[in-house]
Length: 153
Image (cartoon, rainbow, N blue to C red; front, side, top):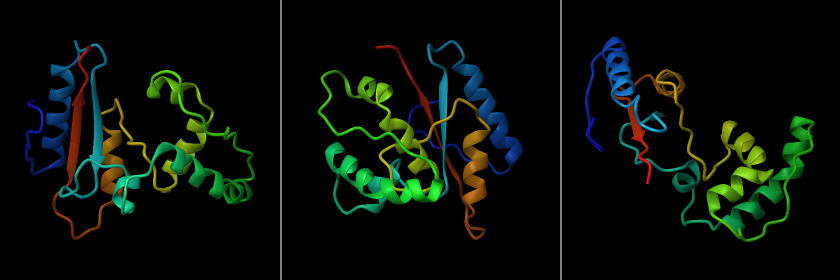
């Protein structure tokens, strides 16, 4: 499948066949293909944070926001969340967050609808469409899926 190419299907069966075809075509890729569902086909591929804020937030600002809501989240969940003080990463950003305990808290917030800089992707061709179809408003007739093939650099 070409990048940024829109393919329309009429039924779930057609969608499933397309998803499986994309998965098969990319099985030799180092990391395979990743899937993401979007509830509204008109949306750009943006995080919930980008969609719900009027300006971009820096990582430091997002950490401050998480710190402000942390006490309420801990009361609500009955769980203590580890959120270290923010410090600029000394290495690559992805590696920094992969080792930072704040990622667990960020993921929890994202899972329960808190605006987040994270995008949910799945290796499964079934997770993305099911989660998006469940959230769609009945009057919407178009659904959207994004596919990302990672190439080694």
